[in-house]
Length: 174
Image 1 (cartoon, rainbow, N blue to C red):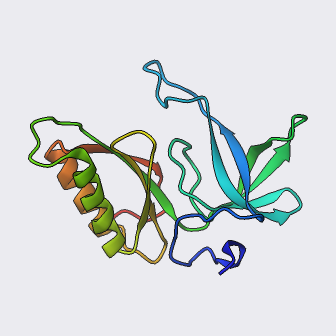
Image 2 (image 1 turned 90 degrees about the vertical axis):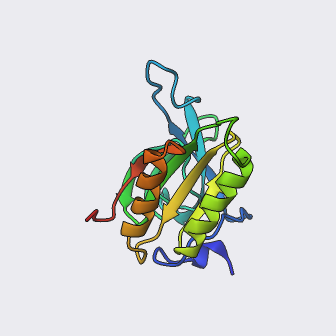
Image 3 (image 1 turned 45 degrees about the vertical axis):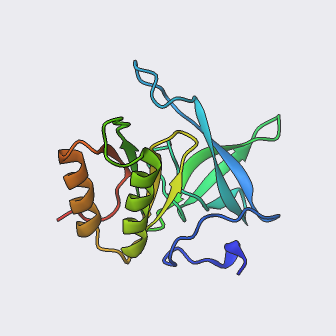
């Protein structure tokens, strides 16, 4: 299937960048502790024409947008596409999870990350692994009730397994 044929309510799959994908750059503002650990993030997108793009991967640091959102971007003099504004929400929420690297944990960090990603996959959510160990970004599609993912996230945070951030929450939270 051509990624440009995927509808906003379709189940999320990892982006398979092809000739019809471009990178859109988003500026990031770091807090006084240096988070996020970058000043910009680029996200794969599919051009829709007239400076409009549909995002096609899960953001790791950008807040306020999610996979399948329609955005506008402007082309800079150096040829980079720079995010301009959100035009239409695709109905997906983005949550980031940062695992605590606890050396005394009974299982390795990679195993714990994989287990959580599998649990989300079983619920109909997709996720992407960052280059930063223990950081994943989770896409919750509109057809998934957010109640179960939130219960899982809250329980893990309470047990001090991870912390999480609601980077873009468009689901109604009960």
